Every structure is written in C-alpha cells, then in structure tokens.
Amino acid sequence: MASSEILLESGTNEIEIMEFTIHGELYGINVVKVREIMQAGPVKPIPHSHSAVEGIFKPRDILLTVVDLPFYLTGMKTEPQPKDLFIITNFNKVNIAFRVNTVDGISRMSWTDIQKPDRTLSYGDEGVATGIAKFQDRLVTILDFEKIVAEIAPETGIKLTEVDALGDRDYQEEAILLAEDSILLSKMVETALVRSGYHNLKKFNNGKELWDYLCGIKDGDRLSEEVDLIITDIEMPQMDGHRLTKLVKEDPVFRKIPLVIFSSLINEEMERKGKELGADAQLSKPEIGHLIGIVDELILRNKKEN
Image 1 (tube, rainbow, N blue to C red):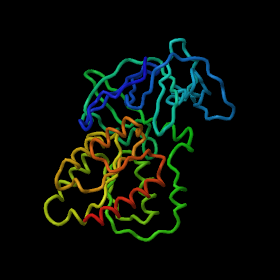
Image 2 (cartoon, rainbow, N blue to C red):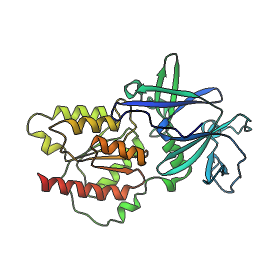
Image 3 (spheres, rainbow, N blue to C red):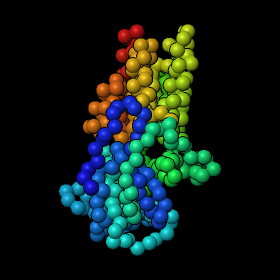
Image 4 (cartoon, rainbow, N blue to C red):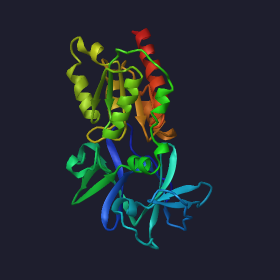
C-alpha cells in the first residue's frame, strides 16, 4: 500500500481509522500516523533492546525499529507469520514499524463517536487504549501509539530537563487553558508550565470541554481574566484540536486569544492545516522546552497588542 494521504478537510472533527488485527482482535490507528503498509520482512535482532523490540528493518533508505505489537499487547511470544504486515508510522518525527497480523481497511467517523475508555480498563494512570470506536456491529480499540513508543524508548518522549535548563523564572499570573486527553501528558505539560512559572492553569480532557468553558465565560468581564492562551492536542475524543482551533479563530470574541497546537502529529502537511485554521504556533510533543519559549513569546505579544 502506498503512503497514506490526508483526505479530511480541516476542522471537520472527523478522523480516519485504519483497522488491523492481532490474534483475531480488532484495533485501530489514526491514518494520519501511518506512512505506509509493507509486507513483513527479515528483521535483524538488536542485543539489550526492549523485550517488545524485534530489531531493525531496512527496506529502502530508512532504518526502522520494529516493534512486535502482538507481544507488547499480550506478553506472549509467537512465531512471525508469512502474511504478517508492518505498519510504518511517523509521529513525533520518528519512524517506527509495528508488526500486525492483518490490515482490514479504513473507516471514517466523527470524534464525537469515540469514547475514552473507562479507567477500570486501564493500568495505572491510563492504559494503552486511547479510545473505543463503534463501527456498525464492531468495536475497535484505538491504541495509544505515543504511549507505547515512550515506554519502549523513553528518550523519544518529553524531557522535563529542557525546562529545568531554562533556569529560575518569576511567577506568571497569566491564565492558560490546556486541552489534552492523555492523563500522563497532561501532567507532564502541567509540570513543565508550573516549573516555568505558569501556575494559573486549567486542564480539560478534550476540545469540547474547553470550548464549552470558553462559551460559558464569553459574556461579561471574566474572559480577559480567565484565559490568556490556549494549548491543545489534536487527537481527542468528542472534539479534536483542529475543530477547537477552527471554532476559536472564527469567533470574533475569542480569535485574539493565542492558540498553540502541541501534538505528536505535527509534520509539513498537518502544519499547513493548522496554519489554515489560524493556529498561532504548532509544536511536536517532544519539544517541551520550545513550548515554554513560544508561550512566553505569544503572551508577551498579546499584551503589547491589547
């Protein structure tokens, strides 16, 4: 299968899910994360790697780490099958191959139809499922591939040391709103902001919750006191970050609020879409130190303009 194309219009709150199977169970991944699908090939083992890492695979000019997704999900070692496929992903500026048994197709749906898994299904702060989608007569578990990769290779994730390197900073009074459905990432962004002096933070589980909050303070004098900047993820149940950005930037009252998209999906195409929607800045999630610099810059600019 050739490299995937982004077919969805910007800000429609829709998602395309590629469905695949592992041991007969149906899972899904956001098509935006998929670079291509390839027939599984010989993998060179790498000593002392994570138990879920099969090794490396170089089909052409790119060296890929191969993750044994069946083993990661079940803990059971199984022999690779001749018809296994590699889903080649690209997010957080990293290319990784995930072994799966079959790829069953692509379905389009609204984020409003995707539910966050109940915490009783999670281990620790949250499990490996980022959402549960229902397509007609079947349920699809959408996996949190960022969490999988961060667990296997922590060096690819957010590094709070980047924030510590900024040194001591003064207390900041500005109010920041954060839309992020991942409990783990929400805590990390909060920690980074607090260490940087931004203690006035309100967190929301998705774009809809943040949008509803904005609408609730739209009339009266509270708006200027309760929001100076918005940070949003893209992938979120109920309302994604692109839809939230579109609503904020098309509203005559909210449009001047600086808005930063902070997502693992930022690439050239997604950056173009975010810019069309009016986002003031867009950053890939590992760039936490850069995020603080951008927040400083946008808040200062907004003060000067107002």
